[in-house]
Image (tube, one colour):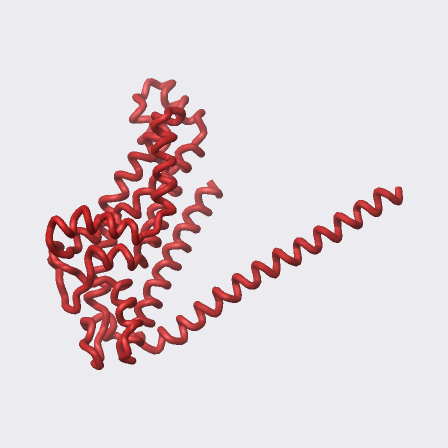
Length: 283
């Protein structure tokens, strides 16, 4: 009896020590996050005004806004999502529905994992050699292609995982009534995994919305308003990068404000994605 009590007390002490260490580690991480967000809110909110969303990026030492940078980021992000999402969804569908146990799926999954963890600057250099050098100039098209390549692995992994979670009994029920396989996938598997796939797309948007390195090698930047996709185009991450390194207080303030805009956008997308996941689990 005493041996069992001693063992119980020993395990309880070890559990208490590990629990304390885990809580302390979580507290340290949250403290740094709070400091970063606090500094961002303190520095960024002071520069939020109507001119940020209505005026172009200013010349050195002058006041202005981030309208052209915000527009460029939205354009390239939307094109990247439009191009990358169908490829990712179709590839994930093949891996989960048609080639779940094939060698090709194993190879594709391995390559996709490499792309998922690859530094974005490598993607930027690849698109630079693929498009920018042959074209002879930077362009928004090249920037959008780089962002699309970053979107694909995120959507592929999410689509495959969500479709694998769909019970096979649902597919068998659709097949039992004589529905073709593509109809079963479209009407049964996709419908059951829809919220998870949409969550993956939102996470992909959150990832590419703050990417700087790929755009430095592809879209570069533009101090003026430009809607020409075949020319350099401003983007919020690159503008923040350039303005933050400048010696001008006006530019530095705009950099803090732009960083706050991106952070709030990513947080909003993350919260929306989690809400979709929560709704799926409730169902």
